[in-house]
Image (cartoon, rainbow, N blue to C red; front, side):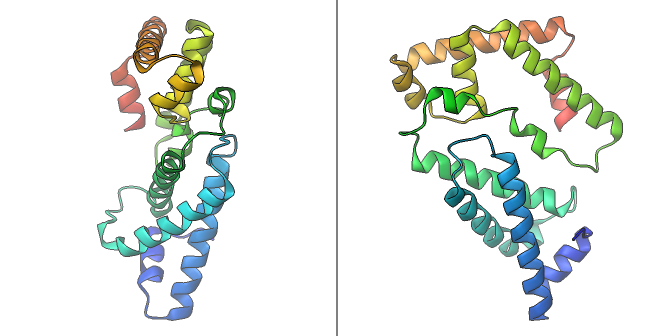
Length: 204
């Protein structure tokens, strides 16, 4: 099912209905597979949300084929659209039945799923190094409350109001936790010789 960018665009725009429908079915299957993999440890990404996000991504992708500039692989571009759809749907449906433990136990940041194999081996290696050091910093430099708040906010994308409610506190207290957590992370990463500019260059 591996396709070049030109093959995806040509097939999805084709006047041949069978060719176009086959490409749409292939893209739908790959988006579903990618989303299930990316959100497999996120309890908020239900099968219904995943399916709806994949369908919405299909509509957006096929309606905006002319906006694809070919700067990355076509499937990478489509997956980013689908992942944004999942986040939007999770925020819309709310977090009422999701505990903080579930929200913070979502594995590694989804940045790993944005890796594009068009990057050089050196850049991919640098990304892996930064991710490893980031998780080391999270585990070693944060208190349990800071870690819970940071993972719920940054990784699970839980709204601040919901984090505060579940922690039995207020928005200002959560903002203070997050500020302190980021300050501690920055210090830890600087000691590991990882700067914000390094992360921006590695993942840009």
